[in-house]
Length: 434
Image (tube, rainbow, N blue to C red; front, side, top):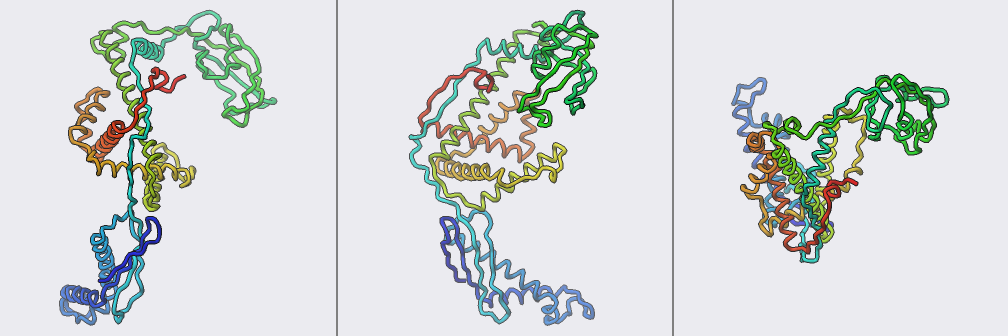
């Protein structure tokens, strides 16, 4: 066998291989002889078919099989011999041959993995978010949970901000009804911004059974483009008024939050623990994003096109599966590869950089790290032990946990090498609230 490798570009290579035809013919003949022992052809007893007849019947198919195997085996041998790191799948092209051709020639065009030069990461500056959960944060979270469990009592008085009202409404634009402009027995809490301010304000001070007509001009950037910028005339009838009532901070409320014995101190402790878990998760996500971006910005890399194409296919298939789960028809939502191109490129580059870091600095996920991650994740569930078992019962779920630990190891290693700048934020800033 003879071979040579051509350099077609920074990562693209073409391997040309020549194999003596006699080796192929020898293997073809050997297989046809074995086939003749069991071949069933009309007019001959099993095992008594002449080799010439077997060759006429099965020869072309067997030759194609042998040539395919020789092609892949020869390629694999050259790759091992020359220590080529093949990325993705090669594209094979074989020259047309006949039985009399002295040699079998083929080429394989492929890309190789790039060399990842890590360099000195001390120049990287990473912003590390810092935040401590305060008693005020816990109180605020509990207040939100109280509001989520608001109860309403019917009252006989004019409407006030915060009341839940039941209304019938009918709107017209230029004398015609429009989509979404009519409803009966509709519940609305005034002041929560469910409707436009110009629609809610006229109902303040109304009494049960009262009717009122007023105009509302929709903003030019209103989500319903058909009525954006237009003025509608609404007729509203008030059917009833209910005053809001928050649950008291007592044992009953604690039980609503899952504290079986109603201990309010336990309730505060549980809420604080949940907030701290969420804070830790958000901070971890933030710093991971900044580390990954810093690696991309500081480590130049030549990206194999074939790997980007494979990742693009995976992302598009994942998007299709997600649409199916939501009950949507794929044909109704055309997916363009351009939507995923940047994400695919980023994921491939990060994968290559992280693989080099893991290999060079032995940052592989250790079993005890995976166990700790799974157990920490399980703490937010009612039965942590069952959740841990559920994770370990699936190789796919365990692989996801191992990947997460591997990322954590890379982040921790980079933070040790880089310049870390701490930035203290409030709870609301961390959660993206204004």
